[in-house]
Image 1 (cartoon, rainbow, N blue to C red):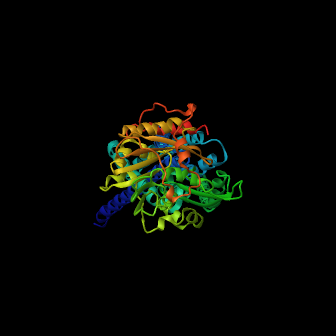
Image 2 (spheres, helix red, strand yellow):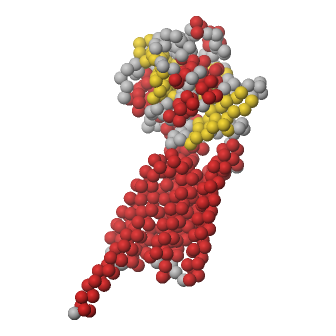
Image 3 (tube, rainbow, N blue to C red):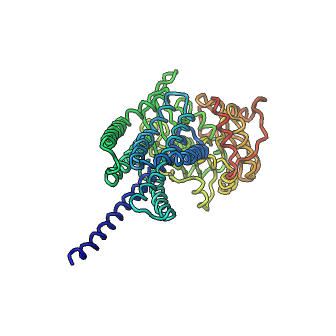
Length: 527
C-alpha cells in the first residue's frame, strides 16, 4: 500500500520539475531574443545619428545580421554535442560583443575615418552568435523532455517572438531615454550573460565537466567585470569621443530619442564668442554669422501679410527673434519635433541671449510635434510660413522636403501669404537645391530662388512661394531695420545665380520616392 501510494507522488514531482525546467529554458529564449533585437536597433540608431539616412542604415544592419544568423545556425550544428557549454559560451560572447558594440563603433567613427567596415564586421559577428542560439536551445529543450519537432519549434518561436516584442519596445522607451545608447547596450549585454550562464548552471550543470564549470565561472566573472568597468567609464568615454568630433570645446550635449544635440563655444578669429549648435553632427548655426542666414530666411517672407506666422522647425528661436521685430505680428506658432531643442532655446543662457528669449514671448506658442502630422490636423491658415528644417540627410527629414509636405503646408497659407523654405547650398549641393525647387513646382507653386553668403555654411539658398502659385517678388520692409546684412539692392542681386550654378532640371522628391535623400548624401560626402 505504501509503495503504491508513493508512485503517483514521485511521478507528479518529476512532471513538475520538467515543467519548471521547460519554463526556465523558454524564459531564457525570451530574454536572449529581446537582447538580440536591442542590438539590431542600437546599431541602426547609432548609424542614423552618426551617418544619417535611417533607411539605408537599417537595410545594411538587418540584411547583414539576418544573413549571418543563417550562417550561425548552420555553424551551430557541430556544437550540438555540447549544447550546454556551447550555449553559455555563445551568450558570454554576445554579452561582450553586443554590449560593447555601440562603444566600439562610436570610437571608430570618432577617432578614425572608418565606420562602414567596422559596422559590417560587428553586425555580422552578432548575427552569427544570435543564429547559433535557437539550434542549441532546441537541443537543450529536447534533453529536458523529448517532443515532436513541430511542437518544440512552436514553443521556442513563441518565446523568441515575444522576446523580440519586449526588446523592440524596451529600446526606444526605456533603454535609450534613461541610459543612452552605450550604457543601454552594456546593460543588455549583462542580461545576455546572466540568462545564458544561469540556465546552464541551474539546469544543465551535470552536463559540464569540472574543468568546464571552472572555466565558465572564470569567464563569467571576467565578463561581468568588463561590463561593469565599461559602464562606469561611459561618461568619460562619451565626453572624449564626442569632443574628438568637434574642433571647439563642447559646452552642452544631450542624446534625445530623436537626435544628438551638441553645443560648442569658442572665440572666433574676430574675438567674438562663437556659439554653435549641432544636430546629429550637422551645424545648425554659428552665433558669429547666424544673422545672415535668419535675416535672409525671414524678412523677405514678412514683406506682406504677417499678422499670424507659422514656423516649422527653427527650435533654436532665432527665426522667431527676427519675426518678433514686426510690431504688427499678433501670433507666432513654432512647431519643432524635439522638445529638448526648444527647452535648450529657453534655458541655455547663451542661447537665450542670442535669440532674445523669443520663445517665451507671449505672442509665441511652441508645439513639440512632427510638423507633417501636426499640419494634417490643422484647419486654420497663416499669413506667412517659415520652413526652417534641418537638411534632408535622414529618412525622417526627407519627408519634410516632399511634394506632399509642400502641398500640405501651402494649403494653410492665407490670401496673399508667402512661404519660404531653406534649400541648402546651391554651390555645394546644387542638385539638392534645384530638387527642392522642382518639388515646390510639383506642389503647384512657381518658386522664387535666391541665395546669400553665410560664411559658416558657404553660399546658402532659399526658395519663396506665394499662396496664388505665382512667383512672388522679393522685398524688404525697411521700417523694422536696420538689417545687419540685407538691403533691397542685395536682395535683388541674390536672385542672380552664376553660370556654374544655374538652374538644373531635376525631378521632384515625394514620400514614395525621396530622391532628395540620396542627393544630399552624394553631394555632401565630398565636403
